[in-house]
Image 1 (cartoon, rainbow, N blue to C red):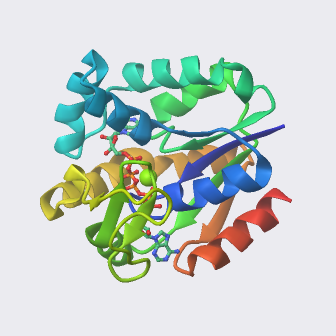
Image 2: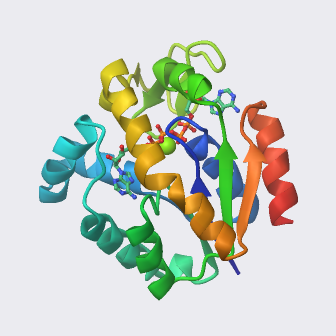
Length: 205
Ligand code: AP5
Ligand code: MG
């Protein structure tokens, strides 16, 4: 049974690696950011609440995301393991998670702050969830579904600075939290997508 959480700054490559890990190890990929964006798109009450926080680069309140993840992990496809991307993001969330699931690996994707700014600024998304980059993974339309590519609202420069600040203040302390539990595994996120994935496979195999 693998209970994996992916740590790392905004733009570190959590979503990119999560897709590869989920397919290699047949685990459900649970991204709180994707769930919140789907709710914004669908115009739900949750989406309306989340939008104001996301657009400002702030975190959605702990109790809201904890409830989403608790519900998601209770579903049958999570019985054999799970892969969390973007959760937990605060110590309060990590403590809550420990009450209803077992984290066996906390993989921290380490990337310099300068690098993440470039990765986020150049990221382009498809509505199907695929992500591209204007220089490292360019495309006119989505290779998977032919959809149009767009920039995430919170990938504008002003918001990125706020997201990084929030990361260092509220999420980076999770590195010590999981180190103390003996489950932290750090990988060098400055390498290519394939090289980063190879390091993650080493950790998980
Ligand atoms: P979320 O969607 O989780 O965003 P994030 O953490 O800011 O992370 P990103 O999705 O921006 O980056 P990533 O690490 O997934 O990188 P990616 O693989 O795309 O959260 C968004 C918002 O939702 C939050 O700000 C918050 O408001 C809210 N939220 C979500 N979860 C929450 C929670 N638990 N609590 C409270 N609020 C929450 O890669 C980035 C780019 O780099 C891409 O273009 C990619 O192609 C490229 N790239 C990836 N890897 C490499 C590589 N090795 N080399 C070169 N380029 C690469
Ligand atoms: Mg992501």
